[in-house]
Length: 239
Image (tube, rainbow, N blue to C red; front, side, top):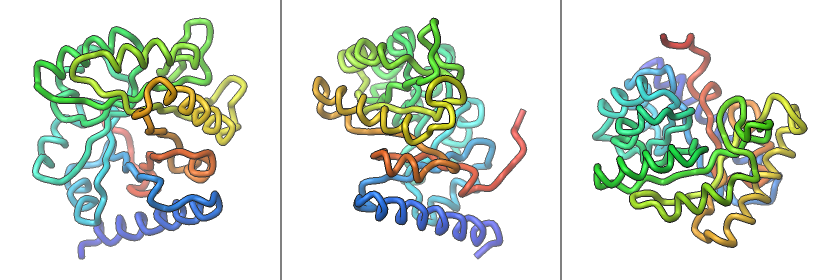
């Protein structure tokens, strides 16, 4: 086993212990929570090691990093999630490899994703990104739509050819009423998910929590946690 594989295996084991403990504390089965490893800024060789270690869900937040990495790992049994703010001029590229786009937050993006998914003859899963720090603009500092905008966007996704409405995603806000109250924000997301499922029963995915707050996300009821640093370590940003 290489040094890097040994390091990643140990990190994964620690994260797995944290998720398992959080599930036990919340009275949830471990199988209810899916780990997504966020591999941004890390090379395709790390993704290949993670696959060997049993990881099946990986995420990226920049297309310029993700596209060549996904191509280099196309032979692996992986599900790719795009989690960053997505500009419409990158949609064609992203639709080429992403199984799920977790950052859908405006109608123009829905239209662009639908067009490219149909062109590529693919079905792309979509999560509505919810911003609990949304101001008067209705958008959050790191993307996302205000809770009041979920219903309209969800209906657009559900009706769009080539797209599948999978659920909701959020990032713990740094400002606003939920700043520093990660679990409260995640609990609010779960309530919003329950509301969404009344109209869209299949939209069961709740993506919340990262390396620092995955326990709070599991306690709140998240179905997916997005963990990068705790698995891969700290690495300088690319570009």
